[in-house]
Each structure stands twice: as C-alpha cells, then as structure tokens.
Length: 148
Image 1 (tube, rainbow, N blue to C red):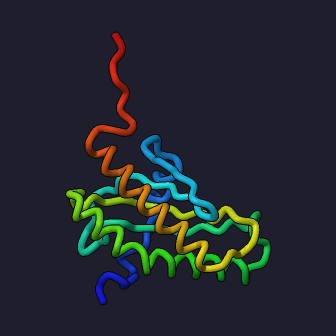
Image 2 (image 1 turned 180 degrees about the horizontal axis):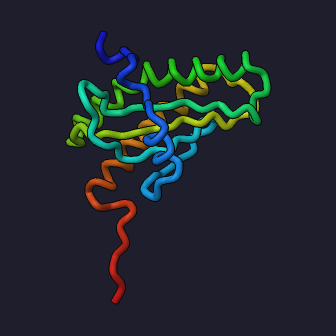
Image 3 (image 1 turned 60 degrees about the vertical axis):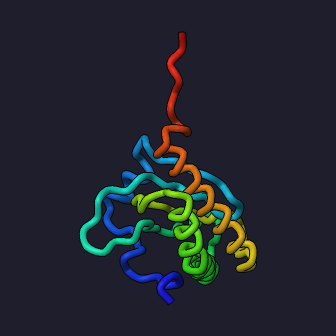
C-alpha cells in the first residue's frame, strides 16, 4: 500500500536544509498540542524525493529519559506514516500541485501522551500545513496590502 509507506525519501537530511528550516525567514509554524510544526517551501530535490520531507525533534528538556524520547519519536513517526497519504491526496484533489515542503515536528508535551492524542494532533497539523501552504501559493497569507 503505497500511501502508508515511509521510507528514506521522506526523511529531511542535510545540515544546511535543517538549519534553513529553523533560521530562514520564510519558515512558518503552528502548534497542535502536543506537536509543534515548523515548515518552509522546499527546494528542488534530486531523484525520487517525497513532496513532504520531515524531521522529528523530542527535546531532552521535556522528556529526560531516553526511553520516553524514543517512544514519543516512534509515535510521531507512526502518526505521520498513517496520515500523510490521506492529506496529500486531499491536497492534490483541491488543486494544490506537488509542492515541496520541509517540515520539523517538535514534541512539546512534558510526558509521553497516548498515540490517539498524537494521531489527532498530526492530522490537524498536516491539514494546517497544506492549507496554509496553498494560501501562501495563492498569495493569501503573508502578503501585505499596500496602504494608501
């Protein structure tokens, strides 16, 4: 089942691209507790890259034990795997072309929450990302109207 795959092509690799995601002025963010998403329009990719590439961050400040950080990372990855295909299909259906997006998912809760909460947050967050990236492409969000 192609829509539920999650391979290497979905990973955001490279220090330069990750740094641009967090320090670039064109990045956007949204919070859907327990996840925060930071994204920007991606650059052209070689080969068979996915339309959305991601990286997961679980801060040691929030979850002190490595076991908890790994559990949170696995739950986020599984939520993305199950959700991304449906959201990308909906995005294509409303006319959003295969736009390249780089995303960072940051876990902001102080304890490991149940998978149900993380799945719901991931669905809301991906919906926001694709909706806002579509508005940005249409010239809606982020454009300033000239005064006078």
